[in-house]
Image (tube, rainbow, N blue to C red; front, side, top):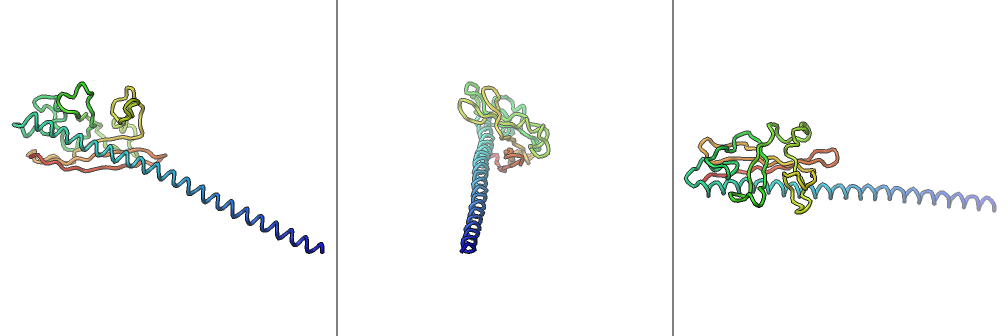
Length: 201
């Protein structure tokens, strides 16, 4: 009789330990799945923001081009004037150069909303040249919650944006540029880019 109770106790103890082991394993798997889901959601959110910033950069260049065309209809070579405020097309976008799209202050938008500021000689590459990437850093405005290049009243964001002209035709007939947005997710550098062709018609 005693042997029967001891065997029964041993069986119950074994079943309890197996149940606990299964529950612990399930908890670990569920925790890992939850962590992965949270990380994936964060990366997806950042990709959406980065793609939006890339589209905004492309539209900024188009805005500059269309403004130049309206201001200088008889000067086809002025279409890539980096700031429509600068008369006589003093500085135009050039092949291989990096630029920063800058939204002008509301009171300075008399000739166009955007301009291109000179970027760094180095391309935007967070993995290799973090120090030179600081030029391309975007800030998040505390009031409007918009991304901007202005540090005042803003906090540094995780996003960097640059525009590089990959090709500018000698006859000013077309240009190709790339808008690149980069950021860190943890220790990993992520990048999204958009290549745009514009025709001077």
